Amino acid sequence: MTDANPTDGENHTTPEEDISIEDSARRIDAAMSRLAVLDLDGALAILTEVEEALRFPRDPAARVQWARCLNGLGFIELMDAKQMRATREAGAQDGSEPDYEFQFGLKRAIARFEQALASQTVPKFRSYVEGNKAYVLALLGQTGAAETLLRRLFKDGGRDFYDGQVRDTERNPIPEDRAVRRLLDDLWEETDK
Image 1: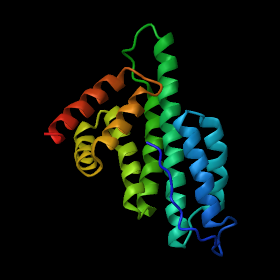
Image 2: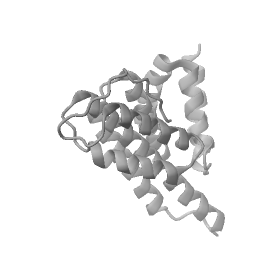
Image 3: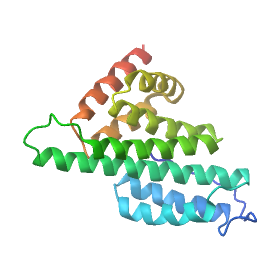
C-alpha cells in the first residue's frame, strides 16, 4: 500500500542531508502516485535518489521521510517479485517447483519493510509499512504472523485499509493472491462484525 504525506510546511535541511524535508516529502509523494498506477521504474528513479540523499538520517523528520522511501522501495521489490512470478507462471509447464527467485524478491521486500519500521515513528505511515509486510508474510505462507498484523490494522484502519490490501492483491495477480484474498476476506468479516 502506498502513502501520501501532509507536510508541516517547514523547509529545512539537516546537516547530513542534501535535500530538504519538504522536498523529500514532495518527491516521495510523487513516487507514491507513480506506484499507485504501477509506474515502478518512474517511482524507483525518484525513491533511489531520495534514499541516497537521506540515508541513515539523525533528524527525526528526515527519518520519517527516509522510512517512507524505504517502504516505497520495498513495495517495488514486492511488485517486481510478483511480476516475475506471473511471468514464470505463464510460461511454466509444471508449477510444482519452488520459485526461489520469487521468494528471494519477497524477502528483499521484507528487509526494506523491517528497515522502514525501525525508523518510522508516524502511526499512519507505520500502518502502510505493516500492511505491506503482512501481505509479503502471507505470500510467503507465514499466515499466522500476517493474521496478527492484519487483525490489528483492520481494527485501526477500517474499511479503507481492507480495500487497500485488496487492491494490492489485484496488482500483477499471481496464484498465491487467491489465498491472500481469502485471508483478507475472512479477517475482514471477523473484524467487521
